[in-house]
Image: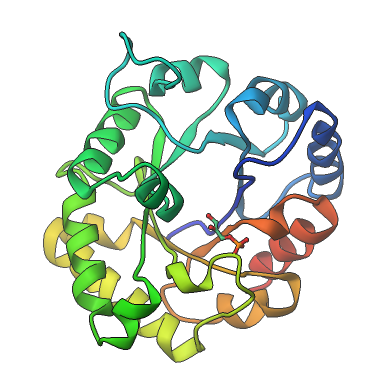
Length: 248
Ligand code: 13P
């Protein structure tokens, strides 16, 4: 039985005052029936982890280097994220793939670094609009999934986030059938590669998840939760999404 996961990605948003959003979340979700994870910018990991201490709210990073330390100015390692209070890290978000030209091999190494530092790797995959229009969605998803996921992936150390690039930050959401098609495809691929363990790996949907559409999306088979961008910044928006997942 997979425990559902509501994850928030703050991207390059948030200042120290944003800690109040964590306090608001922990006071309204004292004992959530689902896992809750917030991934703030690296500057806020320590502060949010301190604010969430003792509450069932996990804190994660948004990226990590493939190495644990060394001459990599401006980068951050999985071990440093762990040291700051993170228990998870996003790898291969489409904005990293685009802005920093990250490829599947590099993302897989990042996921391995995350696992070596005892962080859960949330591996992000998803097609662009032109890839979807060309009928290449499942091919792209398969290539990214195969290439970015380490061989030792388990339900404990790996989460897959399906985020169609064209749905991120656009307010456009795939149909429930489109979401279901890709999630069941990913599930079948995970089971084909990892056997029984493939059933334990959670698959999140991401892209314009809002309080108004969350319940419908969470009703789709093999959707084990969401990776939420804009609507995770404010507790007032993220809280009803967590509640919708609890009720799914
Ligand atoms: P939005 O929810 O803002 O569309 O962002 C989704 C996302 O990229 C989460 O990683």
